[in-house]
Amino acid sequence: MEKVFYVTTPIYYVNAEPHLGHAYTTVVADFLARWHRLDGYRTFFLTGTDEHGETVYRAAQAAGEDPKAFVDRVSERFKRAWDLLGIAYDDFIRTTEERHKKVVQLVLKKVYEAGDIYYGEYEGLYCVSCERFYTEKELVEGLCPIHGRPVERRKEGNYFFRMEKYRPWLQEYIQENPDLIRPEGYRNEVLAMLAEPIGDLSISRPKSRVPWGIPLPWDENHVTYVWFDALLNYVSALGYPEGEAYRTFWPHAWHLIGKDILKPHAVFWPTMLKAAGIPMYRHLNVGGFLLGPDGRKMSKTLGNVVDPFALLEKYGRDALRYYLLREIPYGQDTPVSEEALRARYEADLADDLGNLVQRTRAMLFRFAEGRIPEPVAGEELAEGTGLAKRLRPLVRELKFHVALEEVMAYVKALNRYINEKKPWELFKKEPEEARAVLYRVVEGLRIASILLTPAMPDKMAELRRALGLKEEVGLAEAERWGLAEPRPIPEEAPVLFPKKEAKVEAKPKEEA
Ligand code: ME8
Image 1 (tube, rainbow, N blue to C red):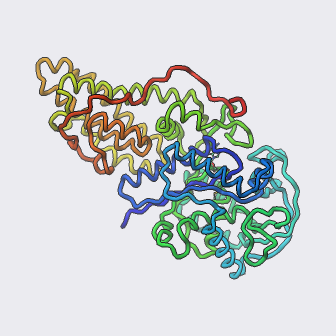
Image 2 (image 1 turned 180 degrees about the vertical axis):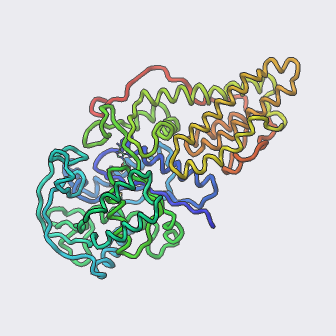
Image 3 (image 1 turned 120 degrees about the horizontal axis):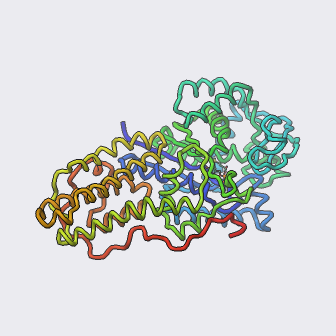
């Protein structure tokens, strides 16, 4: 079977600046995309911005800007953040683009003509920040469970999608595909939701109240509800229904989301797909929340966000990427702070990995004439060639923190190997043996650098340059021993992870 991989992030609302929570989900997607590319998969990585809906419209009004000018400006901020983080997406979709609007209208028409959309009156409790209605039961002490804000009682004429009709099908589908929603806790949450009626979904808003959205093809007085619009980005970007990319990648789709948007992705989206005759996605991967300095979900509404731009400037993109992937067990709520980032930086990156490169280079100059020595068999360090095989399932099961821990344990083993073999003593009596030890360490670093590339693409390229290794092309090269060729290493190389001087705390944004 051809190896194909399609990964998506949520498309982010452009009502405020990107923060570390958005960065996290996007870094995970980028890591997965790079990992699969390195492993020979045909890969497509999609991200983008969600630009319609009431929240965005109100944010534009509050900024005193025309909505289109506003979304253009904020969408650029997301692009800029992703550039700074080294996010190598294949496409960036914006829901205000023609290519997307066309698909939303096509799907609406299809579902309408099939009789799954009807007109009715809706009354309920609405959270404007979430862009959704809540039932009494879902509220926490009468407030929105996500934002802790009062909800509004609303009544209006809407078009409805017959979502309830598809509940038995969806229940069965999730039962039969136990790995559809991961980690498992979230799958159980969804099954619990589906154990009771889910009702029909209001999919339109009167234009008189929300003039910012995609008009319904059969009724110009209504615009499409932002979720019915936004979810379709995952297929519109691939050129649904005819596109070659759609046919190739859609059957392999992995969605990455935060748990705040579980219901739209696990309930609305599958029933929409079913009604439109589009096959299901392959996996819904659900991340937990990054918690702010106050221990609550980091969110722009709560004002406790950590600014990724400041951390990027101070620690560099690869250290930030590494920290997020290494520290956060995927799916679990995890506190994040500059202090913890700094601790990882110093221990894992500067002391273990960076220092290993420095001392290896120094010894190559002292004992091997500044060259990679002649290849020799691997001894115990050859176990590094088995790492790729161990990491593949860990990555596919979203255990990134364990995968990175394994590679870093190997890096520690390389340091220990040097300490035990003491090339500086060996060199006096058995210079050949000293060079053999150094060769093994260089090989170990070559292997580790390949495995760490999806997390730290720039630094690992730098590491290979510092050791005179050639650019690697695939994970397969991490599975073979002895590929480092005897040749000179560069005289000069920058320190990979310089130690940081001053200690500064990450502050909530408004204080920064
Ligand atoms: O919900 N911890 O957009 P959004 C971890 N437009 N992840 C976090 C986070 C946190 N504290 N805060 C945000 C929307 N995220 C819709 C999506 S998709 C068709 C439409 C991440 O800007 C996480 O991935 O509110 C979450 O699901 C997403 O940002 C929500 O981004």
